[in-house]
Image 1 (cartoon, rainbow, N blue to C red):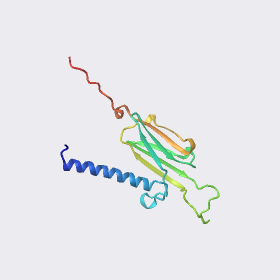
Image 2: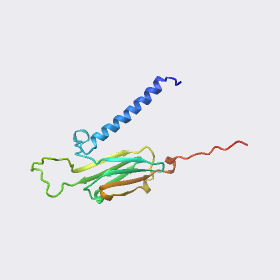
Image 3: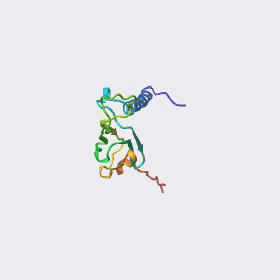
Length: 152
């Protein structure tokens, strides 16, 4: 039987609710739809972030963007991705577009990481329009297992 602890239980529930709401808003605001009213930019690429014991792996959809024009910065557990998807040749602003789902222009995405990263070990590549950023965790962020010995 578990004892009800109103203060501790409420804090845990509110923390979980806040995390879920953050995920929902992030999905809506950065799902390739217009985000202008919320964060001042027309669009941002969709991302997935995976956490492994020794590293993070971030994948971002950047089709149509030259890898050389993507800027990555890391500072104080925050990774920022900036770039620009140019409007393709032949696309005209004054021409009616029956379907207009692709987004163009400048973007910026910021990802807060829960563990410290070895900044010198960060690597990135961009095969097939997907940016892959590998962020190795520092030794202290990886943690360790301590073996308990028998007492003599």
